[in-house]
Image (tube, rainbow, N blue to C red; front, top):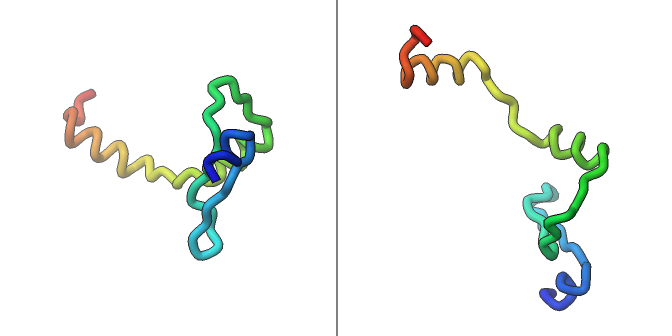
Length: 64
């Protein structure tokens, strides 16, 4: 498998039908298409802004 990755292949790993990882050779010059960026953005968890604010207030103080 590692020889295949080194040759340019990419393997996707899934659990229960859900993709959880991708094995590919590192490419520091990789550019993402708009479609890839949108797909990655959609997989991000939802942020509870009120919870973030409350935790920040508890840590830093509400006067900031």
